[in-house]
Image 1 (cartoon, rainbow, N blue to C red):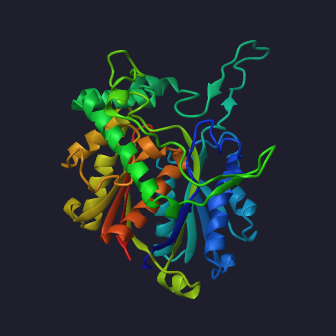
Image 2: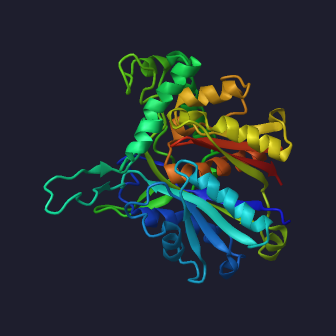
Image 3: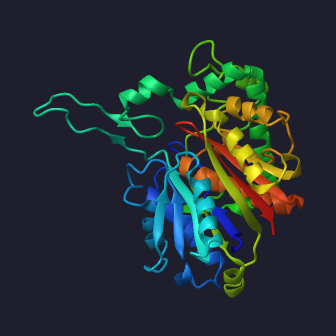
Length: 400
């Protein structure tokens, strides 16, 4: 078995919904970190790239027809380089990293790029075909996030709760108070802003240059979603699911645009192409949970991963837990036996502050985890996230 190493990782800034990156086609957005990897690694013979695996959750608009392959071509990689798009909804980008490592470990490839993309701003409306000839009625679905074309059996057996509704379910089932959620949200924003100011996030971002109708090009070099706030401001926000609820726009992740790509290699390929391994992919695990409680997915996925690898949670130095909602993030920490403010978790901010472009988020977790390991000199990093329709995914990295 070959070992799989992450040798480089880069992402675009994450833009707000309808924000600075919303004018970029999704396939063009996907190509940007690929092109950045090429520029950053001039010693690589890119014709030897075994595959490009990209996560993407939507695939209903400009990300259709295998956006990974489109990104390969648009980034100027050799036409002989293949590409495949992976859809495990929110976990797609992290699944791509795990799949790339698996291909390397079993000897199918020596050099693979993994990552993901999502432009939630550009997610289209879709409509089904008519149910009968000459029908004068139809439905229109917004593909930005959530259910569409619902199967009645799925609704009857499992429910089709929206993502915020699942967070309320978790909050109610596990007694996650509104104040605790707002405190996690505030910490996420403060940590992200501090990481921006310290230059930590800049090291993982490739600036995006946007042409303007008038004046010089606009350069977007930092995440657009983080904002200054306070506990009082967060407490003043109205619940978004039901009047007596606890989930608000302030303690939930954003709807965002972004892309991320990581370069993985085995030891021989790394030497041949002049690459320096930064982290070893130790293992990955996925697990299922009830769809109405999808936010709990990281718990069984993490437990499964730790049992699989023989690494204890106490040995983990860095935790990147995707904050789909503060309610589910807190429930996961508590069920794993961790404190709400465990200093290992999301030290540079989480998705509440940085944003959650679905297909790219897992790749971003792995990118940040590698950088945090090297910044702090830690050994192990855990990346984990919940997934719509009731799943969880977890990835373990070891600093090289």
